[in-house]
Length: 139
Image (cartoon, rainbow, N blue to C red):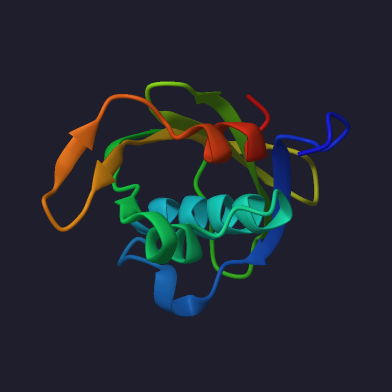
C-alpha cells in the first residue's frame, strides 16, 4: 500500500423503509449492516480481498467483537454517511465507524468491530494479522 492511501472510507446511504422498527426509527441491528457495508468498501479501496486471500492462504477473518453507541436515531429516508477507519492491524483488525447525517452533520452512531485471523478449516486462532494484510491496511 502506498503511504498516501487513506485508512478511512466513507459510504453515502439512504435509510430504506424496511430498516425501520415499529417506532419508525432504524432498528438497532441495522447499524451493524451499515458498518459492514462501509468496512467492505474500505477494504476494496485498500486492495484487500479477503475471499481471494482465503483461497490462497486458508485464513479467514471473523468478527469477534462489535460495539455500537447509538447517539441520534436514523429515520426513514435519512441520507447519511458511514465512515470506516482502520485503527489497528497487529494482533487483530480494529475498524472504527461513525454514522452522521448528510443534511447537518449530526452524529447518529459510533462503533467498532474487531476481526481475528483464523486458519480454516481447523478454526485455529492466529494471534497476529498476516504481514500482507497489515501492509495493505497501512500498518
